[in-house]
Image (tube, rainbow, N blue to C red):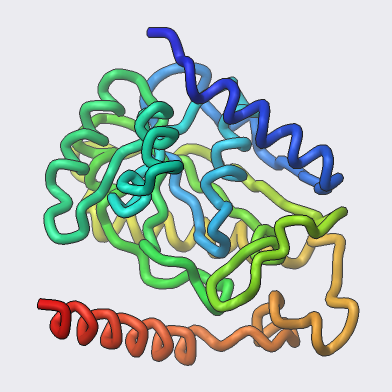
Length: 256
C-alpha cells in the first residue's frame, strides 16, 4: 500500500537534522531485520525520541516504524492527521486493549512497531521500570524484540526543560542491539528483565562513549547524577513523577 505521509515527514526530519548539523551516530544498524514484524523498544529521554528511534530503523533497513503513542497526540489538529497518516497506533491509557490488539495485528502483517516501555520520559535519563507489554506483544505475534538506546536527544527537548530545537552540532547516539528472539516458553516478566538488562548495558556504553561533555556546571543538567551531572536520581525522579500524576488526578477530579 502506498505511503503518502511518512516519506515527506522523513525527508523533513532529515533536512532539519542536516540544517542543525546534528552529529548522529547510528550503531548496530545491521541488526534491523530487512523484513517481517519486530517490536522496536527504546528508552525515553526526549519528546523527540520517536524521530530518532525511527531514524535508526529507517537507516538500518528502510523500515518505517509504527509507534504506539497516547491518544491525546492523535486528537491534536496538527499532529493528529500526521500520526494517523503514518499509521501510528493510538493508546487510550484507560483501556489499552484495542491498541495492544492493533499492535499485534501490525506485527503479524510484517510491520515494525515502536514501544517506549517506560511509558513516560525519564527525568533521571536512566532506565525506569519497564512495562511488560512489549514482551507480551512480541510473544503473541511471534516477532523479535529490537532494543534501542538513544543518548543526546535530551539536550534538544525534554521534560521540565525549555525547548532548544535550534541547538546546533548536538551529538546524538542511536544504538540498536541484537534482536531478542522469544520462544513459547518465555515468560513476559523474565523477557522484560532480560531486555532491560541488555538496554542498561547499551545505555552505559552510549553514555561512556558520548563525544560531548557539559560546557560548565550550568550545562550539566542533561548528565545523570552518577556521572557527575545535576539530573535527578532515579528515586528523586520517581517522586517527581508521582507528584505530577497526583496533581493531574486532582485536576481531573475537580473538572468532574
